[in-house]
Image (cartoon, rainbow, N blue to C red; front, side, top):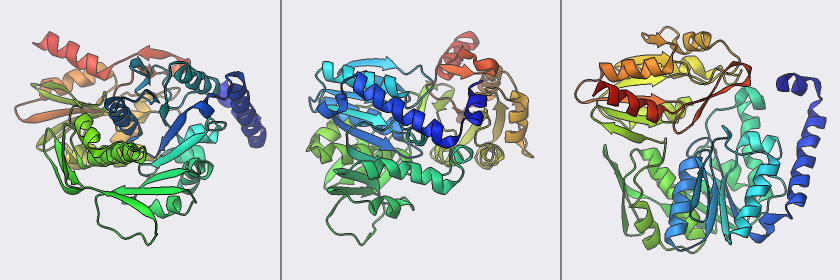
Length: 412
């Protein structure tokens, strides 16, 4: 019904409706963002990890902070699981959250800002102090119409934010973000580059190394060893450090905080050591490849692709990437919404040699049974999500992590 309404109502009217609703939400809750320093994090990958790492650093610094991500919501030291199946909630929910942050005495709010949220004006009437760009790769193409329009949606956050811009200098789209005026620009990265722009602060990681259990790097003679795996997590840490230092938080505090982090829920999360099982949210080709590249040795992979008519182009690409990196592949159900889940599985599988198991629990069980010594089971697509969306708008309680723990208990 909701999709039918969207098709029947002209785009301009629908856009105006979303904009007005954002204004009503802000007015109803007394424009709470004016009493906060709001930091918006946008990009394709890493947003949730960046928000969570940055929150930990601010807490280490003794700052009252609230945060909003696809994983969780925090207000000061209270943490709530995000069960909305939505990274950036609707206008009234966002403004209500900001109001609660003010009432709790928080100084800062760190929040994910998605292209879909921007498209529906959920970022409007929020007084952003800082805009952060993590990276960009194709996603939500069918929704936005093209990669260029998807990028333009991300750029709108920066056009709205005049004070501080923090960007990934190693991303090939960085110049689009650097062109937008701001009072201060901070560029982070690993590559030694020259962007040709004056008056920018540079946060560069040197001597970057990664093992199966940690990553290490050096910034301005500070040696960081963080219990997060993969080069992409070095970028996530760099982003968090850049945000923190932009608010006068020292590298010493950043180091103390990041070295305490055990893992980010549902993001390269080690669920079991014997057999070695990792759960991750990766659901785009770029994300999936980075996850596989960060894990050495033989890999047994469980993956799928969400449905609902979204980004169908990526389905066979996901299958091809799995074939490139994994010794055994199991394609299963993920979030089919109103699509035929078996059809989605067939499209992901393509011409690759895989097992197709419709029941996700059975697929995970099969992977655990296949696991031998020195093999890693990697379950991707849902990460920390607690719901699976199926036909008729139904949402079934789900947890990849809990399924693994339950099955290992039964197998043990």
